Length: 286
Ligand SMILES: Nc1ncnc2c1ncn2[C@@H]1O[C@H](COP(=O)(O)OP(=O)(O)OP(=O)(O)O)[C@@H](O)[C@H]1O
Ligand SMILES: [Mg+2]
Image (cartoon, rainbow, N blue to C red; front, side):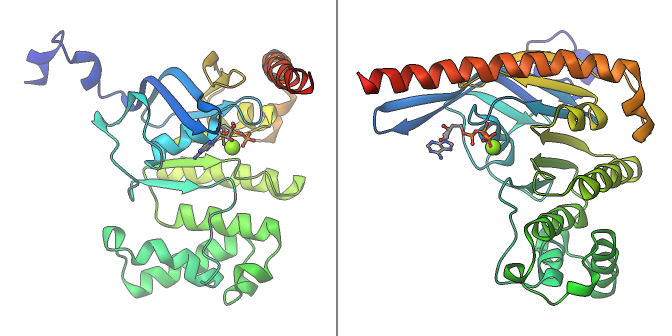
């Protein structure tokens, strides 16, 4: 049946290889001065098991792109398909780590990690739930804080809790918006390696937003550099390293070469964004 459909009109849409497919996605937001385009004509396919990072200037539309996949924002035009189906809202198949660490302030550390495991969609028996909680609290260095509430945690600890919460339910897709931004350099590096380990054992499809070029290269199979607002695809870079990876990769001359290339692109987009902003400032000053 699928063989018969090959070459048919919907062949591109039915390609099993694309687990996440952006097709000419644009997003406009209303503002006091009319509508503002934040994402413009983004097309991108993400295959099963791929790790795709998005990098681009602050305020250009990266979180908005991720929110479309998360089911929190509907595109103004174009579509995003998940396994060939349009996204109609959030779902347990997608574990989301929000930029502002999405933890529930009214639940303890343990309560936050257990939350997803108790949802009907992924209900896990109590004994197993406890084992998963213990495992992630230990991995994230939060075991001594099981009964603490987020307001009594540091920013980095809250971020580690948000990561634990997303990993605990073993989602097929991980959508991570600057998940390691609030961590010190040592913890950040440990969290990157832990993520690689989780992916090696559980195999997920990942979309990561980061401002760190090194982090993007170290973790990703592809890197999408997006433009100053509105976010468009500026360039897609294949990262030529296989997995597993470890810290030695960063000594590789090819790593340094990629870093230079991507930094240059990102700097150009920051400069373009600065020109837009100063243009606005100059106009308002006149
Ligand atoms: N719900 C919304 N309503 C109106 N404007 C919005 C909304 N969400 C985001 N914006 C605007 O869209 C633009 C892009 O925001 P977005 O959060 O996607 O940027 P970003 O690339 O993630 O930035 P950063 O790197 O700083 O996190 C910003 O100008 C922001 O003010
Ligand atoms: Mg953002």
